[in-house]
Image (cartoon, rainbow, N blue to C red; front, side, top):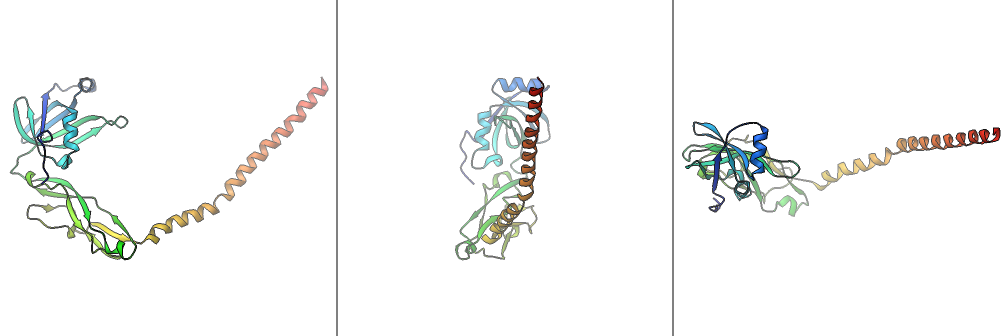
Length: 239
């Protein structure tokens, strides 16, 4: 388990009165973020939190899987951030959902997969390593949530696929993702270049028609200009 600082392991929340979107905007103008706390058999509680504390948790080594102390109205409990929303343009936090948890009860979380080592298919065969699955769902106790699950790809060669079943086993983790789900393989560089070559070949053949259309429009415009000039000349002669 990675080291978690005291700041990353604490979130203070203030109860708030639930209301409309205008109430949520008022909370944000005060420099806070609207949030909801639920779980542990208790009713959902609307609260407001400090976005800086939330960001420290989300950007820590354990990210949203961080187990922290939540303080609400003088009461402390263990909790996790289970959902969060960002403003698409400014990137500021809009809302988060916080779940109370019991350290002796298992929960389901998604953990990232980290590939380690240089595949033989890359080093000796000149291929490219492709990671298909980047995270896996596991069930475990809150205190056993890993920062990441490492998978050694050193022996990976062409025509070989590493799957979820190949991830290192642990008595503390139960994998919920399908064991046959592919995680990584080595592909040929030619397989990468082939589509690009086809696109280039197709692009070389395709412009013939658009050029004719463009040329036709240009000629029409020129013809229009030529027919317009005599009309003006005729009018001038009449005058």
